[in-house]
Image (cartoon, rainbow, N blue to C red; front, top):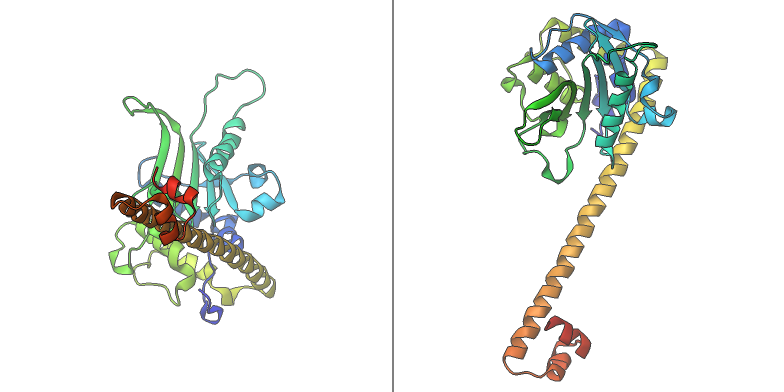
Length: 296
């Protein structure tokens, strides 16, 4: 979105926006609703959460600035890391696994212990798609657990990674059926909306839109949001430039490969018609060494 003058609601992909909606005690009901929709009844319904210290999730301030993490614990002891990942990183999966070790290690008490662990969930809201077409184009929610590679049964069900490929979510307002659909829609489209859609009339979304309305913010909050938004769009621009450059380089490589293949076929046809290597070199404008290499 480049026309900021029409922006009514904050962008949840920004650090400020994500923290505002999901990282404050005042709005933890939004987080609870999102997590329950995400789990879709597969686990016990979350009734309350306690925010934990997210400082442990990164190695330093710069790391935490790149992706804002929410770290919380449900009443039953289940721990959740919710990560808004704005751009693809080289070792994103490694980072997810590394982050998951924090809530695991923190469960170890001092003294004797029988190694009982509560459930740990790492949730990644991704503003990009996994590379190399790892998942089908119409598949955007992925739940990963440790499983046996032979018969594929879940070997350990207390460690779960859930990834949402947001760019793949293309449902329109009329197609929203479940609470999960609604959350995906609002996360993906919030900053583009000028009013609350009729499909999002649930009480929790009424509160979300109230909390997301920029006009209600103080001058300080607006400045903080603008700075956070600038960082987001700067990062987006850098990633897009790198991606576009990679595409162009790929096209050039393809063209060069095509030219090389065409030359090889031409040289081989000429040889088949009885032309000597010297004649082919002169006619094709190639050195004798190049002709010999193309004939191999």
